Image (cartoon, rainbow, N blue to C red; front, side):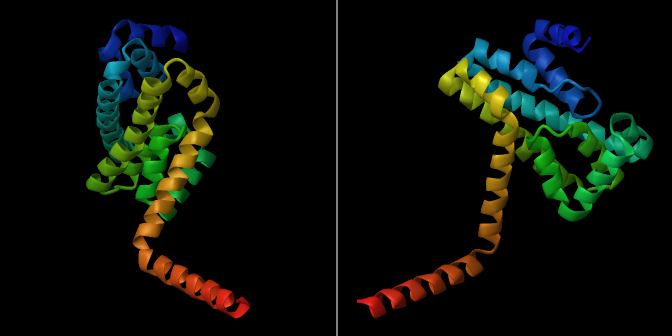
Length: 205
């Protein structure tokens, strides 16, 4: 059934990609990657354009999910996830806020669950949009760039390593953010370590 529906989207090319990316962020089960990757393979010079359009359509669909979550609430969320999964999502929002939205856009986690949840928890629109753009953009542009760089070999690499690759990117971004926000503390630690190492070297000389 899902394969038949994907074939219908494929028949419409870039328009099918836009509709699929929009729908997946709010109510549809098929990820747009399954159409983005073949389009990029068919026309590598346009891969970045496809990634950009896919990102924008996905974020637009995310806003629809947000609105639906705000209006309908938990009953809609329970159609896509179990009560246990909803509880975990709520816990992630409570702990990480905008970071939960960003990570959901980047990783294989069903994105619509988080867009609907953002509406339920009335997350502020600007951080919601920014987190969605960054998460979705990083995901789709990574796929497009890999295809431009290595062609069809990127398909097997993405399919075999997508989960850990996205998680690794998310960890690196969070680490960079922490280092940036706490750079004074990091510099102080590095200075202390440098002083200690130099002191040891002088003593041993």
